[in-house]
Length: 449
View 1 (cartoon, rainbow, N blue to C red):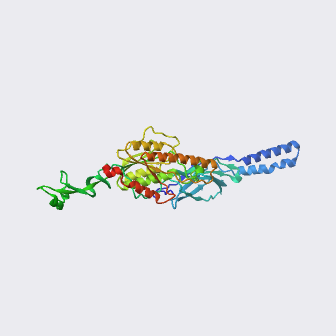
View 2: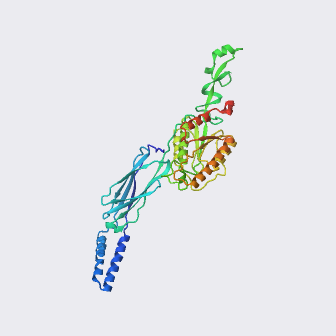
């Protein structure tokens, strides 16, 4: 479930218009019937037939007399309240011109079906409701279209400019207790213990005094026990603390949901949890955990040349990262990179993808060949087959088989795998992160330096 930012300010959206009026189709048809009856009565010499046109003529005159005045100003205001309980409430208010008998309102929530209601005038009650926050990211929450009706619907106005509420909904963030590290730690400060000697870490060894060692580190008991010659000194050395460099690469080129029947239409209201919802949650969670641990994190969106955040640390940088992740959305234009994004030496690369094609896997293998530790995070939600046809289920099975082949291929070449959704076992992701966080053989041999 997507959780919006509690500090977002939701300002009202207003539309002011001067409606123009046209005769309704029924009124025009009534005028034509009146003319035909009157003409037929005169030509045939039948007064009764001509008298039948009289009610239509009276109705035309009455409607014209009560037609709304032109030039009157109308205003519609859409107000969204602060999100609460994974939904957001709205109020739509109208200030209608004199002479309006009703307002026809059409609403579309999250791009789903269109609902139509008719509000009586001159005192139009406010339209209230709530919108479920089903997804994260930039999205159209609700769209309203409206038009005015005159007396007895004799005059109508064209639809006014739509009222559209678009908001950026922040993804939920899971707590990440275990953090995998790169094969080599290159920073001079941080919270991760490296293999080189320095300050801040746990006890490393006893070593003869050398140039650069601090006098306060001299171990006098060891010196008295081991010293053979005058001037022999021994110091207690500790491990240095280093920071990690992490690159989060998000593949946002597709955004399929858990409902397989909606993969072609991809309607936000009915597709269920989408791959980008999971990807935004995973990216936000990892970025927050690494920044809070004192590491440097960068971000790259594969579907855009512009959505890139350079590596840095600190709370201000974290806000920039989270904002870049929030506004990530699929691109309508397929974008294939000629070369992978530049990665700092010794970085840990997370590739977040639904793995529905080979592009993300190709980049992950390129980074692995160049010596980086690469973890592919699978963000495709568990499939649901409500209202699917036999052909759709067969197509999904073929897609899954191709995905399995890709996963098997990159794991055999040294790229690690992590599935983020926890629909089967709530401890599966945590257990997998703990396994990935264990020191690798290269690190135990002195690789993290």
